Image (cartoon, rainbow over all chains, first blue to last red):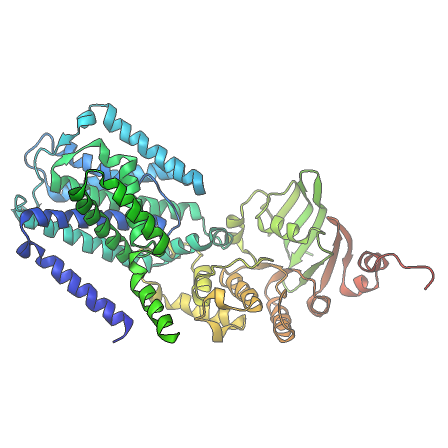
Length: 322
Length: 252
């Protein structure tokens, strides 16, 4: 079997397993997997910036949290909100916010870019933290889960965790397929060219600023998709979702999984959420354990989880030769 | 002569107290190759950077097809048809030869804004890439990573990329640097071919190559033009001899 067909086989098996999750797990653990998938979408959206465009955003949680708040605010006055409209509004608000912030932050480069993305995210954090827009620092409950109504018929029951799970899985597959396709389009290749050598792209006539703005906006609205799903699953939204801790977490997921690889982002999110959960069971000082694991991962696993198989293979080959 | 495409008049560049380019006049026209000679530090690369828009001028005026482009950025000038190669190889090292040239070929709007079409479906661009790669003599290396090419091949790749952007004016900064004798000969042939339908400015140290392709030569020293004219004039110029070989001793 070629490398590619092994990969496809693995992907198919994983997808089938994921579809079957609600049949094998209770609703608590199904929710846990759903949470992983939400963060996988979030991590993929950030990987578009970090791994494919070369933009290290340290404020990506802002768009995730903003979309979650959009759900809470939009559903606050009604018991009957449409899921598709709510999803569109969440992604739109996150995308527009990213567009506006991008207009400013993309004028900077390197360390300054990291700092201004952080600054804008903190500004948005304090908007929700210090005003009554979304219940202030206590956060706010989502009044009612939006219903998946299309042409007058309700497609499925949102009070079932399994249905919510499948909705999340469908979003993950769609976001993955969209990004995969986009990265192989002229636009996606342009972004990768910018990451590789922005100056050269400019001298070939690419107005790189606008392409980066396009990527920043798309990444923001995809983070919005993840934020929407988060709010729908947990029904509770706090300013912490926009905080720099959250931005840091998603950055670590991408690094842990392997930058510049969508599957890597998914694996990174999986490892991160599982470890967080596992260590929290062992000790209340779990961030300490988490931190050491990440230090070790970065030191001994450059390229992240996704490159682990090929690195192991290389090591084995060099052993068998000597 | 009204077929001058690029016209730089009185162009100067100052880096603090250093006058890197002083009052330079350069005209480029299709069918002619203009070579820029001079010892290291004479300001040749600075001149290319000024014409390409990589550096802003401190004074003077640059016109393309009679239109003032002095204030335009390198990106805007590229869109208008000025293409350049770099002295220090400047390519996407982690991409293949094909992908480097493909990016150059799709740089003409609005192709690069297509978000959902697959790059492997655009046969028009793929054909163009093949043609440009072939013209630069890299067919056999088309699927190689740029970082795995020899230095000379990377120079060829730069040329292929410039061609793929449909540039009408080529600013080539030492395209022969690091090339073997055979590669150089191929490049000279390519340059002779390219100048049929391009206006070319060539910065080059290889004298044999320069005299084999140049229609006009400008010799620079310390940021100033020392001599400008056809190759024969330059060959016989006393000033150029002095600049390159030093003062003649009387006791010869």
